Length: 142
Image (cartoon, rainbow, N blue to C red; front, side):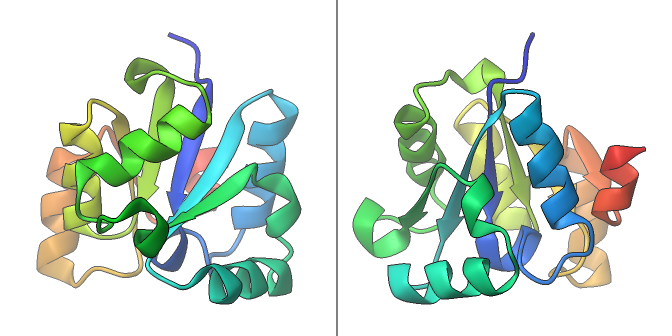
């Protein structure tokens, strides 16, 4: 199985994360198409991604208001995946909350749990359910 696309939950698994830019750059160089999903407005998400130098690596952003569903709904990830013209088996979702992780898995995608947004008990549940769990993006790069 070749990784064709990756979807990042902006607030919980991308913004404010050390080495996130490096991961995006490497994945992009490897031909992986990247998308962000967010509960923020489009303007807020674009500004936040630009301020952290992440905007240019992404093919696009899908907001909850545009998708008419929440980050905790598998339809959000299906819609982002379709925009990337990918398939569930070729897509990985980077999630920082249990509800996001479960939604991605229910949509048939691989899910990487990214530490930071979840409390310890939620993090343990995420680790148990995720395809892979990372404390930081440096772990993903190793």
